[in-house]
Image 1 (cartoon, rainbow, N blue to C red):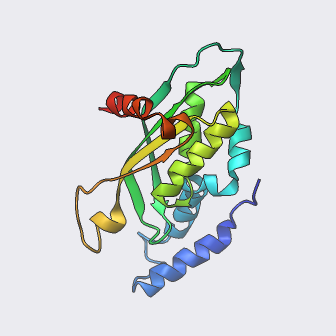
Image 2: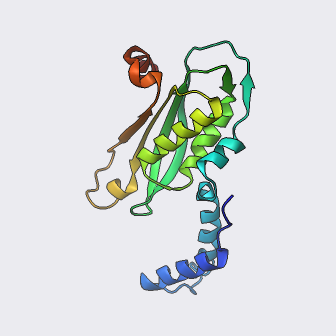
Length: 192
């Protein structure tokens, strides 16, 4: 586990940002903002404290001796994250995670917890997909994993081009999902 965030340093940094933006961090509406932001960062960036291996260990409870080799798909897992390029919110994000059990199935809520923890990092949407896929492979001991993430990025919708409503879809396709196009199409059809 990585070290805890330095709450006081984050508060100082936020005070500096407020000042440099031209406002007074001591005025009534902003007086407690540095502390609130530091506490918020502690929550929304929790995943930065853990490696993928540590997340796999935290949420790695599986049920053994499962004879099914059929597709398991959990869709519409809602998460949010922050773009590492602008520290801007990535929102309206949905993760869809599928895998083929290899004698082990993971508790369905653990899949949502993995997605949530991976998203709680400064991220790229592409990396969210690959990190979730890597953790699922470790936990379920299967190569056969597919992760699809779709979302909106405020660095694109609220600034710059201001292309409201533009959605980004990324995927990590591993094992049979990469080689068996019918299986991959089955996942895509189930997501419709």
